[in-house]
Length: 203
Image 1: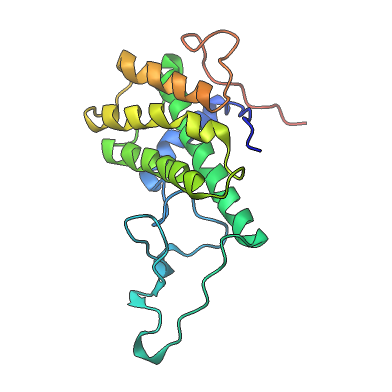
Image 2: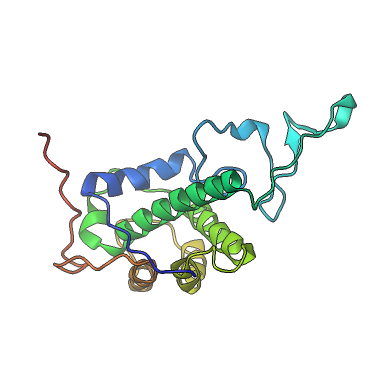
């Protein structure tokens, strides 16, 4: 049975870093964040975000090479990898949206992603939604599907706006709505006054 989950908001420095990190690439070729040890250059994906089996720019099996066996997506290891990648892509998306939901946070950002980088970030999350819909019943998270309408709206809004520290009200509102759908609670002081959580002090 699918359940909703609660996702904490990152600290102020982490939210700023999430924006800066987008310039380095939010997605792997198949969407989401790279799994530990992944080598994006050795994998490519088709339009549906599925691995095509091409290695080093050559399709597996070409030149006499035997195509490697494809992992069964129902196997525990494949499910764990998918869950980890989904969590990383969702957390990155949520932290980025938290910055655009809080005017005081975005005002202090050291750098902002471009329009294209924001669209790639949202696309990575929408691929998580698509894979959740394809998953066996009960495997996906309800919150992922609940957040889809807001993510689609944000994609359309960012497509017509160049990110700046002055966030349009509609983007701000949808960013807050998508966070609520994902289980991110509104800060005690409210989004308008939220400045990001302070980093924990060292022991």
